[in-house]
Image 1 (spheres, helix red, strand yellow):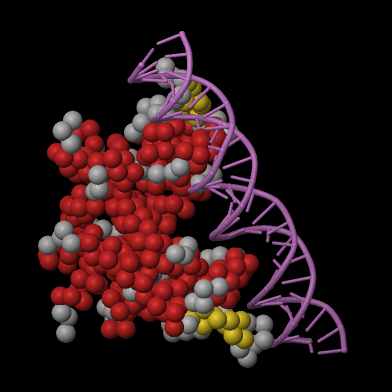
Image 2 (cartoon, rainbow over the protein chains, first blue to last red):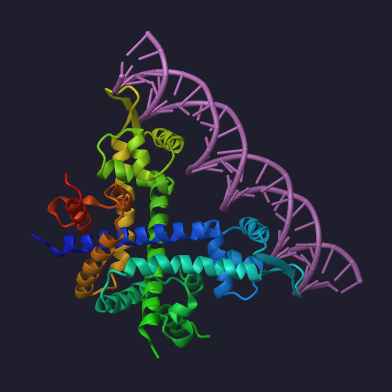
Length: 181
Length: 181
DNA sequence: ACATATGTGTGCGTCACGCATATAGTACGG
DNA sequence: CCGTACTATATGCGTGACGCACACATATGT
């Protein structure tokens, strides 16, 4: 009466719905808290957590936009003073530097996200949390594409929470075992 | 060295990343397979799975758009012949009916979604799947808002897979125990 | 019947993109 | 050196998917 086929579909469907709700809620919370588009929020987060002072082009690669789209995005971030353009040794590049107010905005984004997640997971017992942690880690690793796509996948991540630097981030661990650097 | 506080944040962060990737991938797959906006895909799915022949206004409520936005959305669905407008007993309402080709489009959306999910969950053992099923169910129920929001939360769901009619959908179960109807 | 509420459609503006192209700076082969 | 090819950034312009304000048509209640 419950062939495994349909069990699989059941779990998959549930997971799809769950991912959708959580992504919706975090996107809403982020947008409310930063008054910026989802892309701009991702840019703030990336600038804050991953990239020191990247060029527009690097940001473009991370966010998966066209160059013109990225230029306009940087315009939008520059306008409220979240970011300043600087030009480096290579005169073609314009480097994007997060300002203090930009860092604050990035923090608002991050804490909006983590509130949603905290509330969502609050119904779980400590045991369930541990189990979910392990399963989510396996799923994430399975969903990795090229090492380059990791930054996009982990956009909006809170690096402190994920514990990348203490080797507690499964994605970073899997990425470093793939790469030779 | 690993206070529970940080464990919580770790799991939450992982879940956030996971939800983001899965939502991204399904959205991409759906957009590729239907050549429609995410909203339009959600509308096709809703029309196919939940609503028989709703008015524009009901669709508006489910999708969370403005009326004008919904009107334009229906225009976009009518254009390739996915949907036809009919007028019912109440002359103010225009009822939206899915055509055969619209049903096919909705099926493409659904199978694009389930492919992504199937692949994502393919790394799990049967045991992990069962555990994840239970945890996802609890999380989803915890994330329910009003009963009215359920249809939005479950947009894109595959009703066959979720087993709503056999009482195997935790969300539907929780909703019916809340409502009096 | 007539005011009021409700549902649909239209004009118009906006935001976040993409594409094509212009401009400026760099690298390299002669 | 000097021109050619390349690369990064910026700008003009178009588009899709919205929202807001408003017009119009249809119901409902007194």
